[in-house]
Length: 298
Image (tube, rainbow, N blue to C red; front, side, top):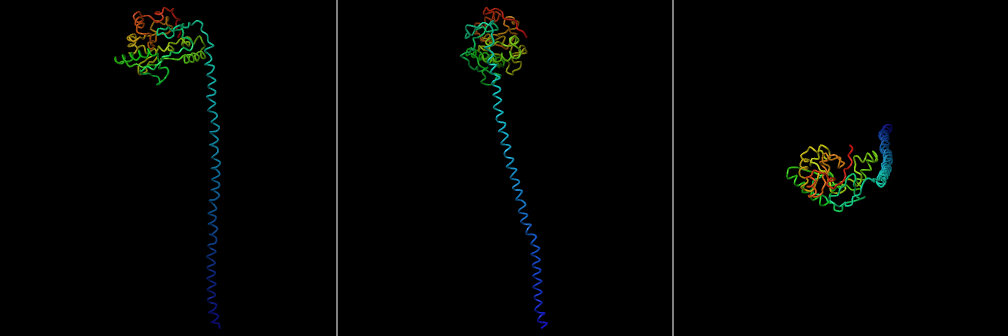
């Protein structure tokens, strides 16, 4: 009986031992199971927290341009009113000492400090001469009256044939442009002082469409006193009359013309008149029988 009981208990002990061992493996795995969900749950909150900053960061860039946009249109609005007083000044200025010319369309018209073009005069035959300019293409200041423009093209071609490269600096100026320019100087220095170095609107030869300032093609000494010593100035002095132009403000004649020597300032008057003025060594004022103009002030 004892051996039978012993045989019966032995397998029971083995079964119990195996059960204990198996239960011990499960307990070892059990602590690992919560680790898996914790690893899954950990990234979840960061995702929500990372999404929130993105939503908060998006509005500020959208708000910044909204605040800046109204500022840009306000600047032109402030500038335009500032220009209106300037545009309104010319009618208030009165120059009773200046005579209005009777034939502004004449190529021999005399315009100077004592004689001016009619208010808002504009030549009706302005064209673009086909010559080099220092000005931007299609600039209004490239224009000249048709007859003068054709003569200028011939003059430039003849100069080039002699190895002289010329360029236009400034030709036509509208009455509005001259008015704005003069008003700017008046605002800065007053009327009397402005008249010593700037032409009163209507008295600038550039408004006739018959005058042009020229220089060498390189632009050196353009409309400045140093141009007098250049080869271009010498060629012009010897040849402009052949093409109907004169050096409008010759050297030593400032007491008559009212302007200092400007070898770069050409004025078209037609070949016949230009040659007579050149042969006699006189000015347009003297040719026209006009009285001398005031002496210029530097």
